[in-house]
Structure formats: C-alpha cells, structure tokens
Length: 264
Image 1 (cartoon, rainbow, N blue to C red):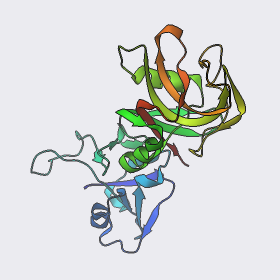
Image 2 (cartoon, rainbow, N blue to C red; image 1 turned 60 degrees about the horizontal axis):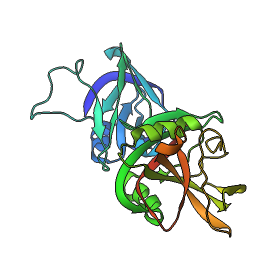
Image 3 (cartoon, rainbow, N blue to C red; image 1 turned 120 degrees about the vertical axis):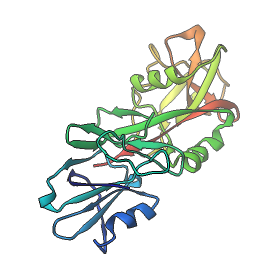
Image 4 (tube, rainbow, N blue to C red; image 1 turned 45 degrees about the horizontal axis):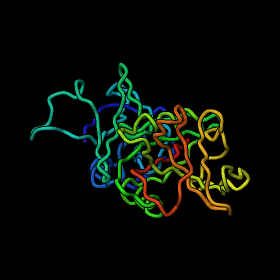
C-alpha cells in the first residue's frame, strides 16, 4: 500500500469500514480492495474492483486537511520506493489481470476497465469492458463457464458493428474460417434467421445492430428445419468485411469474448 494525503472526489459504491485506525492495513488484507480513504472526520472507506464502477477519481491534498488515501499497488524489488511521484500505481487481481491508475498532475483516475480490455460506451448509455481470449477447441457450452471462472466476467454480446470489428481485429489466423464465441442465439433455417428469436444472456446487450446482413452478418444455408444457432465473431476471408457468423452449438470455436458492465 502507498499512502498519500488526498481525498476521493468521485467514487460510487464506497464500503464503510468499522475502524479508521487500521483503514489502510485492512484494505491491504482484502483481495477485492483497491483503495482506502480515511477522511478527516475519522471515517474509513474501501473501494472494490468487484463493484465494477465506471471510474474513481481522487486528488492530492494538503497535510493539514487530514485526509489520507491508500493505493494497493504492485511494487518491484524488496524495498519501499523513496517517493511515490514516479510510480505507476497498478494492482494485480486474482485472475492475473491488472488495473492501473491514470495520473494527471495531482489527480488520479481509475477508468474501470482492466488493462488490455477494451471499453465501449454504447448508445443506450451502457458502458462495457471486453477482451478476446484464444481457447483452442472451445465448445459453446463451456464458453460461459470459462469467462466466469477464469476471468470473473461473462460471455459478452456484440451491440454494434464497431464492437464486432474490434474483436475481429484481435483474431489472428491463416485459415479461411476462424471464430470466437460471443453471447447471443437465434433460430435459423436454410439461409435466413428469425431475428425475433434473438436472445442475449449477458444482461446488458440488446438489439440487432451488429447483425446487418448487408455489411456485417453472414448467414449460410443450414438445415430445412429451425435450428438454434450461436453467434460468433469470425474470420470470413471470402466474405470480408463481414465479421459475424451463426455457428452450431455442437461445434468448437477457437476462443471466446468475455466482458462486464461498468456501473455508476
């Protein structure tokens, strides 16, 4: 923990801790705690990455204010740094992912997305962080569990062509077809899909914006009867620039896209 004189200027979901005498040390012992704040009035607040807040902001203050914040951060070497001013505050969570604080002058901000995860501010006001993971021969039935157990996230749907194009840019393959599972199912028959059956389970994705048949969604001839198909973002070299394809639930893909919603 690195402590400085400072105060939180914006931070939703503070957790009140019962004692201010060990505010910082208690945060250090809690896996979920990323920041402690001891106020001049003697209150102690902890902030958890599990709350997935859209941002936390704080500013350095004068010692006379009596307000102290504590950053949980990775420190290289075996000794405490002489000064915090040249440090990049970064914390590793149990999944192996990291969160970093952004410093501007005497202020720090935390944007809610893990390092390397992409932030999308959707037109419906929802903000999502997502990342694509290569998992060879991944069955669709195993994809949601992988996201939840390995990344504390959910398999995420594509709300726009922009999102699916970003995921497509993360795929690297020399094959003509290569795909990652994303959230979303719909019923297809022959070369058409029934959009009224479209269903997302991540809790924050809606709509068909990413499933534009002209520009982004490829549907190929399937069976003569209705089949539930599972959405993927795929490399479709012969049909570029399209990026989405409905796959069979019984087939395997090459990875999965996980994500989570930021809250405020």
